[in-house]
Length: 193
View 1 (spheres, rainbow, N blue to C red):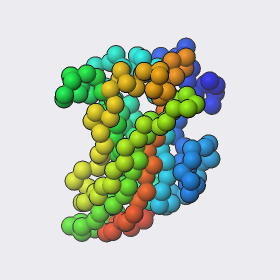
View 2: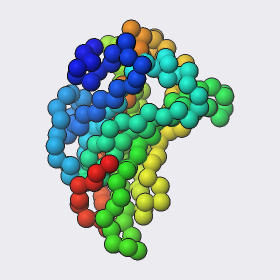
View 3: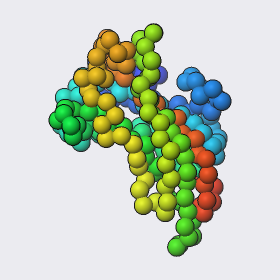
View 4: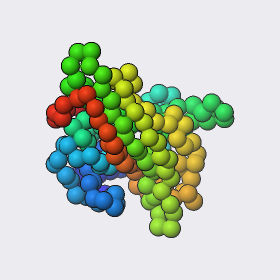
């Protein structure tokens, strides 16, 4: 991988996040960056390098992607190490975070309805992405993040036969497709996150 392009460097002790915004109808991941912050859909990508080290960190250890603008709101991927309730095993918590404050007037109700597809992208040909879909509605900014506290166990995530984890590169790539279906009570304003 080429560190000059923001990709994994196995000799570094840090995590590099790569975020691209894709607005093609097919939602295929490619490396085209779209500069329209008011588009109604997009994909947030996050690459976690040195996954084997991250998997050994303590519970609640986080990784946060760069901000991507979708429908005038600032969105990020957040991952956390969680402990599974049923099996007491370390899991990857996988969340979507809306970091923008709405521009609604004081006391004015607002909401944002959106659909998502949380994915772990396959690293091996013949494997399939691991995905879960959710539809959600933020109302009056009472909760600005949502997702899956136990998206996948680290043992499943790092099982090379499943095809999500590249042991040679020691990385996984996460994606969340976001489609804002409706937004009320806020002005479209570029949010800085």
